[in-house]
Image (tube, rainbow, N blue to C red; front, side, top):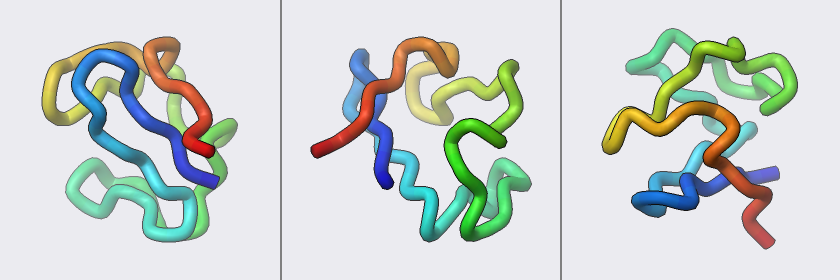
Length: 52
């Protein structure tokens, strides 16, 4: 599953994770820390939506 920032469009892909942020490949969005911020615009995790 992929999740996209509603503010800037940055995409989190569960399959790839986010190495620069210390999130390993295969990490489910539910397991991403609640204090996660978008690396481009700083939006909180609640500003992301499932990408269809």
